[in-house]
Image (cartoon, rainbow, N blue to C red; front, side, top):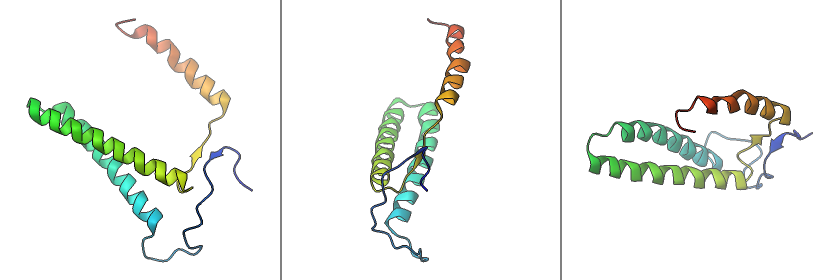
Length: 110
């Protein structure tokens, strides 16, 4: 029985039912997405700490391109049914909203 809170497309049927030791398309895309996530995390730190303007500009461009690549890989995986999301219950969303909505009054600029 499928999970009612799951947000996913049906799998494309391109993968074998029994997984062998060799990498398939889903494995390669999953590895690519994990690498993009690692790179964006690392580049965020590097961009923030760049002391030279041109170095900052170059790394910022790399960061943006890496984020775009990650998004494209995610979209492809989701389209093929290889990336699933869980829908959150409305009550939990409302609780989180209530918890954090009061924080805006603490911002220095309204």
